[in-house]
Image (tube, rainbow, N blue to C red):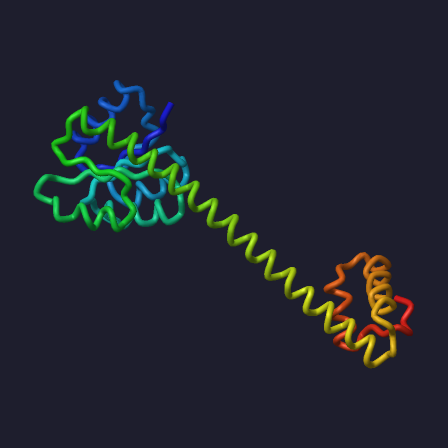
Length: 201
């Protein structure tokens, strides 16, 4: 069952929304009369979708939508009066994934919720993919940095201590195994003068 938080400062509209949603098979898990309450409820309850009136006391629907989408808390549907149509672009910029113009019809509300949830799912997948890509890039950069450190340390062992390349590699590998540390950590110790071929550890 899709879980919904409603934020609407007009009690009659809020009641109408709840009845409509319940009849359509949604579970209304929270009702707020202002944007601050809505943010707190969405953060705590983690619904599938938040329906936010664009004009509310405290944090308005736009402010709440920005926070909710930025933190990836839920899909967002914005409610706006017909006279506020110029605010729809602002709602989109705030991250609203669908909107409904008041007075709303049942046939407008349900598709808007489904659209918002589908777009939120796409957004979540895109963020996950971007995070995974960034993690791979960070790992590759770290690996390259370790390789550079390793090559520099190997050069120090060869130039300053007269080791052949193979012996320098064996020394570093044995030090890493004995100290249960990475080759990068061993390389840093060599470069900082803390570790030389005459050391036992």
